[in-house]
Length: 425
Length: 123
Image (tube, rainbow over all chains, first blue to last red; front, side, top):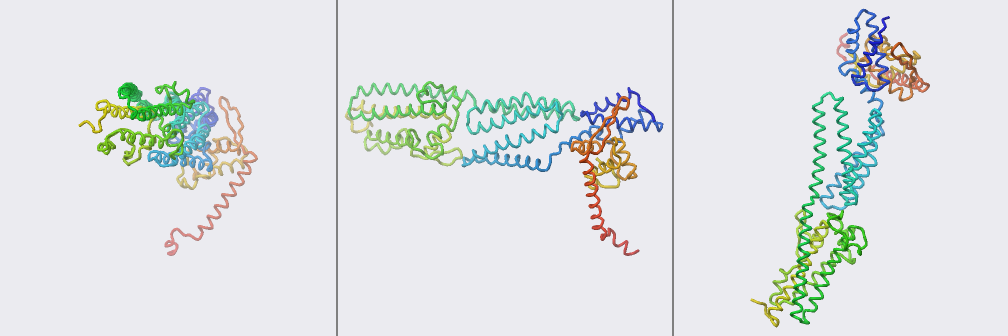
């Protein structure tokens, strides 16, 4: 019986490692197998090279790596129950998330509950099962990589859920998760893949595509919250606030000129309504920042995390349950105040003009408005159901300006024709 | 996994464990190459495994606690001998019995079936 030299054994051992067999126990098995087979053939008169080549050819086209792959497959085969549970988790959470998204887009009830359940199942059920499987299936030195991927995916999923639900901390979680994926998991994963892959161009391009997708999502998030857009709206608000102040000052000066008892009610009601809207703004800010109303005046809208929040206005003005409430501030109350104020102002116009003015004065709440889907909705839902906080604040300032303008028109007519019972032609 | 001119893959799938277990029940302790040669010799080449096809099964049986290994140095390399554990012995009996019953049932079932009735009729 021929016996291989130490050098030949080392050569074979190196060949096994180089051909992708990483598992130690399998290396031992294969080394002994190859050596024994080669020794047998050398004993029958073949050369070492011939015997080596022949033995390798018996392993088929998949070569030694195929043995390792099949071993991994057998050892890591999920048992039937685990498979079913994982599949069930995956399917249910996908279904819930999909249905939740559709419901959300259509503004149907129940969307939030579906999305929370779907994400919960994904984060607490599906992802841990996949992690456990990956940890079992891969070599130990890759454990950290898979845990990293798991953390990244979990954070991203939670971040998306929080973002959709307008819960605090969404952006930080989402960005953190995506950073872990983009700068940690994905590059390392593809680098490892690339090293051992058969078709390197394909691996390279698929890693490029994945990175491009992540970068696109980043970019999308950035433009979605464009600071320039917000800044534009906030500057409009600043202009409007200034205009309200100017109009208040000029109206005050005009009251001093007219000095008519008839106008006392107008002055009181105008001031009250403008003040009411001021405190409503503070209430919204306090609600959004979760601080007492006394501290709301110190809040800077530009730095407020919830400045684009859609839920603040809805919760305060429509009630948390989407049922119109009758608390201290509510959409229905504000609508009533606007209607009352309009009637008061109309009353100062000559009777012949009142019908026309009814449709042209500011603060109109009685017409139908167009909603996002093109249908009709009432004033309260149009103003408060899905309006970002910073737009809502600006709208409120605009209404203050409308009040001052309506007041101003009455004052103007009184100044130009103090005793006029007819309008200027 | 199998290279087999005589039997289809579907037929052989799942029998590899039975083959390995029964061989080890007969032979106490064997190393991988030895098992491969045994299968070849015993079946006169009718069940021909690709080289190395046994190792996944051996590792799986070891992970399931049916086999233990014993390492013996041979010069520069190590030879791993596989043998049955107590559980493995039981499993070998169960698997072999199960397969016997199965093939008896199949025999009875197929006895009445003649794949080519015309031929028989003429003779």
